[in-house]
Length: 322
Image (cartoon, rainbow, N blue to C red):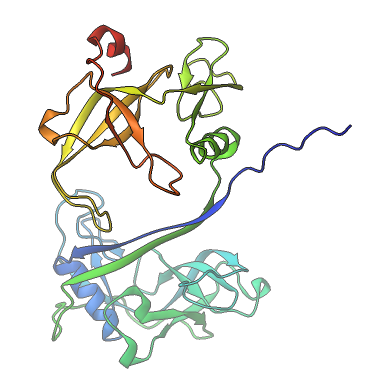
């Protein structure tokens, strides 16, 4: 007789993305507009160093800085790392090096990609130059520098040149698209919890030391630091321990405001989980209200919780779960 294999741990690809919008002050506006025009600008700090990319405030004194200077599009690699498997949206679609480049005339380094045939072609101290994106493709962003490329020439004569930072049609704001792709696994404990929810059961795990029942389970007791392997079915009813009234409608959530979101201590659980309260006017929800889950057809988790009609729980029965 063979032992039954353990249930498969759940996995799911997830994407977190949002547009980050910010306005630009005079220094950052000049820097990004300069990139659009094929010019690299830095700022001179109080100690005389030229900072590229420019900072809006002095790194030594924290005072606002405004003295812009133009530096060369050539420079020296100060350190690097090879990227053998470029990801979507990275500067180059073929393997490349991430490099820190100290541009001629600057005292700090800028991070960007270096187009090189392989890691053997990259070294600290090598000379590089900016490869600009095509003029029609430049929008006033760091991507206006398409990448760096190897350069055989020496540095330019003279130091950084003063620049007034004035351009036609300056860039005054940017929208940065932030995105994170990853594969999430809830682990053994929460896989069992999720699978039980699909059967309209709520299952937690008990700590063998303090005996608290965690819902959702975490696989280990955060207080005692020991594994929680004893599974316990709790609920289905529970008690509202505390709550908030939501007055702002969330995007892609088909729920009319105002509505109530609450912490609910299910019977037998050692801490509260959260859920939406329905079936009762929002201004009648209260601490101690007894509620039960409401499932929709095909739902894998409770859609909301509604009053059971029981008398409210005594405060002493749930005060430790607030």
